[in-house]
Length: 284
Ligand code: NAP
Image (cartoon, rainbow, N blue to C red; front, side, top):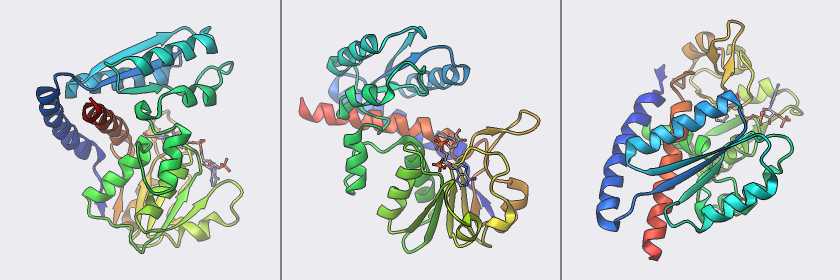
């Protein structure tokens, strides 16, 4: 069994990004720029946004964080997105989710110019991914594909099972595995006998959001297990969906939580932002 080290992989990619960014700035005279919009006081979102801004700084990007009060209106946010869409310093725009309930997330995501949608949530980018011509791929599944690549795990011809069908993880994950020639099954709350399906998986991705969801009897001997979950256990400790101690001995590869998928997400956001700046530089 080998542990897939997302922390080390992420650090290696960020070093590559630092070098690529320095070369980009030298030849184009501007830095890739990311704008993050945070509405309200959600503590987890505050941490994520701080980490994103810090990561930008570390690789040499320009970044700005728009911290807005809970009472911000839809019209104000749409206005801000319009300004950022037109701002030459900004190549990536992201709205930190979840948003306060009075705001229409769908309308806001739709307003972000697809060429600046580095989260890959705009229907245009979702469509591109669906037809197999990816533009910006959502960061968490993109990070998982990068981990698989860097560990020499090729989904070609493999039975892949994704548990979870959210727009930000499960669905794009299934599309990416299918694009890589995996045979993909997606499970969700209405799936009958999820255990029987997960037991068939050569590559098993759990994106459910429940501690201890994936137990050893649900995993085939020699499977690759990717744990996307970020949960708190009974003691308040961060844990994934996978019952790690029991499952790990059965796996060929497994991602831990923390230190697996998590660190890759922001790294892929940086990658997408650099790509957007490169696209812009080509147009100028
Ligand atoms: P989500 O929107 O809540 O989706 C969860 C999915 O799991 C749903 O599709 C749901 O099915 C399915 N599900 C729930 N219980 C199930 C069960 N008993 N059997 C089979 N399927 C079940 O969550 P998400 O945004 O995709 O996130 C999933 C987890 O990943 C969370 O813990 C989140 O914190 C974590 N996450 C981590 C990162 C990272 O960077 N590491 C990034 C994003 C998310 P239905 O559709 O039928 O309801």
